[in-house]
Length: 121
Image 1 (cartoon, rainbow, N blue to C red):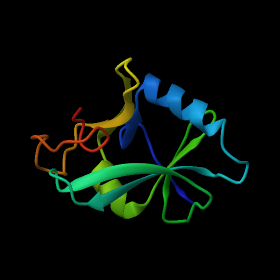
Image 2: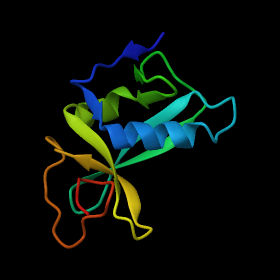
Image 3: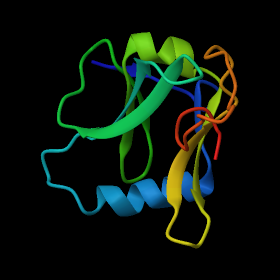
Image 4: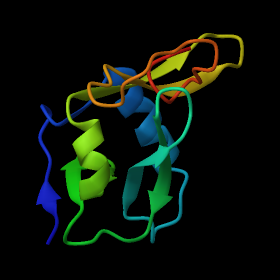
């Protein structure tokens, strides 16, 4: 049994939910959800990524959406609490998920901020 996440812990904007729904409709049936993970590195100290996952453990936090599940392991959740995940399409073929309001990641965008890891674009 996984841990249920609330909107106050992890928020997705409407564009992010729409894009995630679109992407999830294209994956194989054994995919259980979309896993958000944190990795050391980058100019902000922590960078985030997302990948489809076919496993959800009892220690994972899960936020259920209508057509997909957002999965976060407990170590990543410590960094992700209060973050808003957005999907930004600049219309020139440059579209990405962006993590806004990183309260515990520290650092800033600077010149090395990448879209999807700190709300920098």
